[in-house]
Image (cartoon, rainbow, N blue to C red; front, top):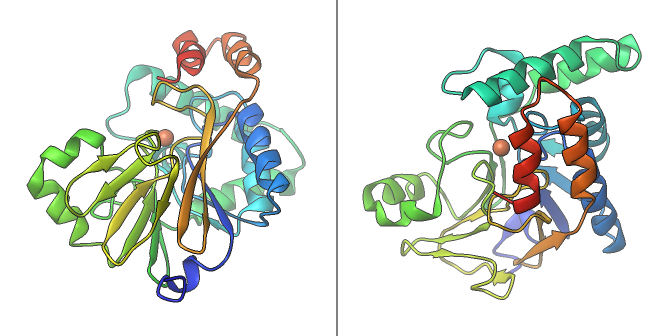
Length: 260
Ligand SMILES: [Fe+2]
């Protein structure tokens, strides 16, 4: 089965997503990744937005991730977004200010903008498709657990997946089966073996989990086995940073404590 999985399944690899400028969470996840001797990390988008450390998180992702996908919040740092609520929009403008102000040397600042400007919307490797949102609309469309009841939507999404699709965006980790089931990490003992059938897997969020578990979430793939991992980090520290920045709404700190 490892052979079948092609380029994406034989290497031990970490998949992280939706860091949302939460540097404390990112550092904790990178430490957990290092402890498992994983050297290859892919990022499925939303490095920035909502959180207090966009520059630090970008610098780390630029250094560590040979593949990073464009998220809707990364795109919003570049172009004015559609459909963002006022809290998210205010965070976009604040994030832009951070990226424009002299946080680092001029080459470093240019490097961040160039990196954001060149991010791909998808990445394909063997049987593996990596993206932020959905196979139909890679940057913006959400695939929520309750979408399994929308047969037309699920069929349309799976029609665009060769075999395995890895994604983020909802901040809710789990496995979507081609039989229209959603399996939470708890349902599957935090581990899932990729088989012959198609699969969409949401890797969860490093910096703003929304599945009622405040711990940072990411995924490891090795030999076609997908493992969902949770990592504790200093939630209070990030929350306090958010409270200290007037342009980041306090609810963005509050929600980190509950993982919602
Ligand atoms: Fe996100």
